[in-house]
Amino acid sequence: MPDKETIRRARRDAAQGKSPSTQAGEFVREEIHHVREGKHGARSPKQAIAIGLSKARRAGVKLPAPSASKTSTGTQRRAKRDLSRSRSSSRPSARRARAAKSALRRERRSSASRPALARQARAAARRRKSR
Image (cartoon, rainbow, N blue to C red; front, side, top):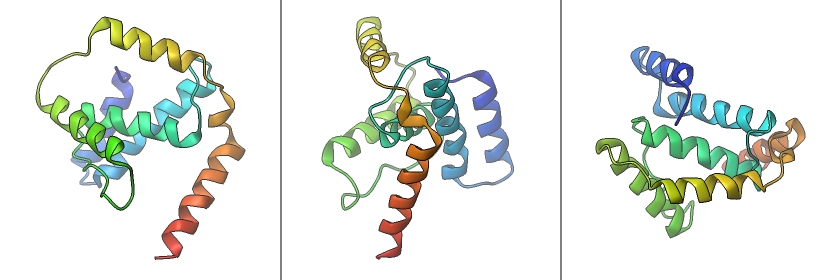
């Protein structure tokens, strides 16, 4: 569950007419903070970003699922499921949530470090440039 402050920031962005990716950025920011403060880890910067985007979709940000050319079918399926979750009010089972949280706790914290995020940003920019 995202912090109230994060949801408030995202709603403010929406009210100002900012894009869904900007609204989702608040959730990604929160996730990076969680990893940095040691709440849990992530396998890579990409995973930390993906968790943030997933939370954003579930919180109701109208962020579309990525296109087929960009990601695997599993990621797309997950994104579509998150979008439908925002429309209904179903909660994940406690057992599943606990398992996911304990798996993340075992991951490293360095994936949200400044150098790791900078590497990820540069790689993403390089991919965009080649189009």
